[in-house]
Structure formats: C-alpha cells, structure tokens
Length: 222
Image (cartoon, rainbow, N blue to C red; front, side, top):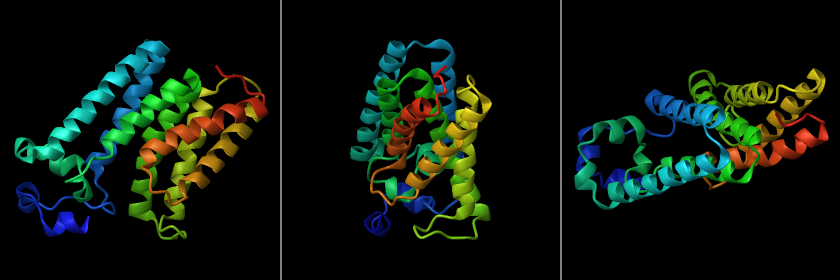
C-alpha cells in the first residue's frame, strides 16, 4: 500500500482514491446489490448446476478483467467509475476484492445445499457493508482488532435475520436458537484478524457453521 501511494499511476494522481477507513458508499452499495442480486436470481430462477456454470463463467471473466486492469493500466486509467468509485488505493496495482467476492459466491454455491448457500450469500451481501457503514459512522467502542462494537452488532443483526428469512420452517424457538448461535459464531469469526479476504471466508465459514447447526437444533433445511 505504501508503494502504491508513493508511486501513483496517472489515474491516482488526478483524484485521491479511497482508503479502507473511508465510508465509500458507492463500493458498499455495489457490494450489497451484487450479493442480493445473486441471491435473488439463484433462489428464484436457477437450479444448482445452472448457478455453478453461470457464476463459474463470471468468475473467469472477472479474473481476466482484473489481470487486464493490473497489467495494462493505460487501457483502464480513464474508467473513473471503477478507479474512483469502486477501488481502494491499496487495490490500484493488485487484484481487488471483486475476485475473492465472486470466488466466495462460487465456492459456497458449489459446496453447500441451496438454502444454506443462499443464507450465507445474503450474510455476505448485507453483513459486511452494514458493519462497515455502522462502524465508520457510529462506532465509538473499539475492539481489540480495531473494529467497533457497533459495527459487529450490525453484522450480528444481519446474520440473525438472514437465517430467520431463509430457514422459515420448523419450531419458532428452534429457529431463534439457530439464528442466534449462528450469528454469534460467525460474528466471532469475523473478529479473527486473518490475512485472507473476508469476501472469501465469510460465506464459506457461514455455510460451514449453518449446516451442522441446523441439524443440531433440528431445524429442517427448506
């Protein structure tokens, strides 16, 4: 990141790029809408194999476009929407979070039952941007990893309601227990300072936790 700032490309010298600590609403809304769109289309219109083919194709396309952006900056330096509305300064000369985001979606859809995958995609779509927005605007109680209690609370709420939305069958008390414990465990995981991109880890770990928890609390997978 220091090297990127010290040696800016022509695009970065024209306008400051966003930092991780910025509110960056355009990026947050893009993240949210993309995840919810995938969840809606997969949930309503696509079978499992169709979703794997489509998301797999999109993943390949995203990878190719990212390599073109990084290795041929003259071709993309005038695309101000991507450079200044979606990217952070630290991503200017390396792969952006778009790649782990789409790969997280693909691996989750590929590996888990449809309702489990849908819940985890919604958690990725809502939990991550909501926790960032709440944490940046209203976070005043800092945790050990630098994140805020308020942001983590927003993440917990998003996870809780995602489970309640998708897992709509079975005793209400069992569903509440499933939603609470899953939201608590994935919120605790979100605090772990991993070097892996959370766009990749959150949906996979969420689904990995949700599946056995649904069995433990005897909540049927819809």
